[in-house]
Image (tube, rainbow, N blue to C red):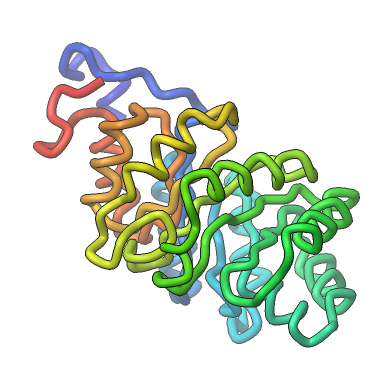
Length: 257
């Protein structure tokens, strides 16, 4: 890439290679055709740290194991969306969900309570149980915007710390695929009080992953937390664009380090 050549502009941030401890990009796959997915990972796998197969799409994707294998070969983590876990919880069939993870060959799982009603104790229990076998990513925040707005900044901070204490290695901050729920208001603006609470809660920024499907959210979070903030729910078409934002090569973050 030219970014590593003598032709690169001055003062471009240096990005760590994979596996990256920070500055990770999680792409959400909402049903990309398999050949297009293979092309994506072949072309831009160095910029992608993880792929989340959204909600229950893995169950209706014929080539899901092929996609997982493509990720594994490229050093890209692959896992299924937490809503699928919640669907099995609601059906009292978590053992079947575990069997699905094993059959698919994934080693990372997402534990969330964004749709179902689940006590903090129950969620922590699921995280502890799954951490015995899998790498656990938890998610904080609700899919329903009104319900998420009832969470105070202290609630967000406490939930993050609770999930980490239970065994989660990364905590995802909900914003959905629209960027208009979770820690964001209905107009897509991040809640400053929540971001302040998360920044001051004592959890390392390295373990937080902010869902940021829109350029406006990406720019806001990069401006607040810097080049190496972890961002997720990035559309497949936006992988390269996000990297240029991280490096200050786009007008929105021009020259920013």
